[in-house]
Structures are given as structure tokens and as C-alpha cells.
Length: 120
Image (cartoon, rainbow, N blue to C red; front, side, top):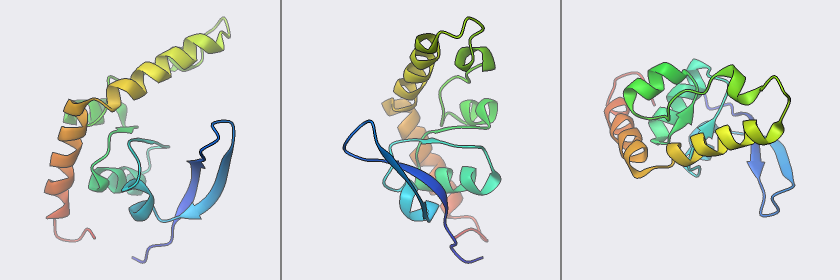
């Protein structure tokens, strides 16, 4: 399988601007503190191989110790449409994902899967 890249959003130095471009996950994820993604198997594997915390396949990733406790849909889409509530839940989850314990576990999983035959 050749490295084809995927659609990604990269944050610039200016917090209110971002750019969308195609970059290979193998390159991108090694430069990220954490990944928030759609949960496809390729993206999940790339994030695991990079040894970074991630937000998808929530229950499984939490069980592996490479992600914070899963968010509920109601955390991100509160009925009263208070965006601050959703922002606070997401902010707390990102903070938890960047904890030393989760990062250490993500690196351990990365080392294990990088030894598997068939994944490059």
C-alpha cells in the first residue's frame, strides 16, 4: 500500500485560522500531541503507530489506555445549545488525553504494533 495522504486540518500559529490540505498521516501524526479523528481503521492504526493519544473507537481506546474516558453525544451536542458546555467537555478530554499516563501507554502500544508483520 502506498502512502497517499488524507484530508487533515492543521492549526497555524494564529488560533483563529486553519488550513486544509492533504498530508500523509505517517508524517503528520508524528508531529501531533493527540489526534481527534473519524475513527477509520487506517487513521486509528496510524495514530497508534505514532504513539499519540486519540479520540475515536472511544471505549476500545480507553480500555487500551491510549485515550481519555469516552465523551457522550450529549456532551458535545447539549440540548440547551450551550456551546460553552460542549467546549468544556472537549477541553477536559483533550487535557486528559495529554496526561503523562495516556501518552506513556500510547508509546507502549506504538512499540508493540510497530513490530507486527504486515504494517509499515
